[in-house]
Length: 122
Image (cartoon, rainbow, N blue to C red; front, side, top):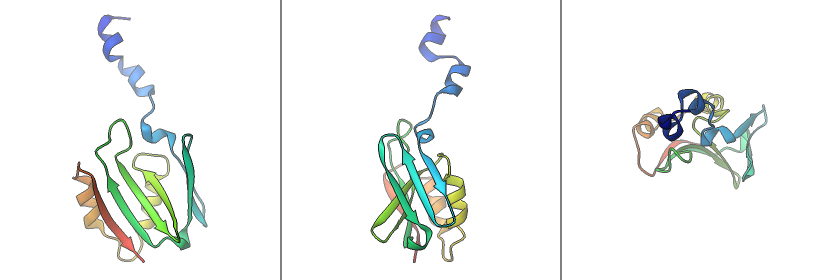
């Protein structure tokens, strides 16, 4: 292996490396959403318990997930990092809730600071 490949790695090596979001797994059923991670406590919330949905942006990327979809209610919460398995499916479901704030989704997408964006409230 050449000197520069040792320092920067080859393209093939970089594509096999896991991103921080890759360690999160989201289980979606008709009843609940559950998020697991090997180094975090499992989070689970029933769909009918959700009272509030937020996007939280952090400045921790790229070494940690920096955008989170948060489902909260009944004293429970579920945090799903953008780019993880299940993010798109959960977003697809909750974005259909009546009164979902798409404007704040757009604001979140253009934000690189620590900020919280309300998306929906029951």
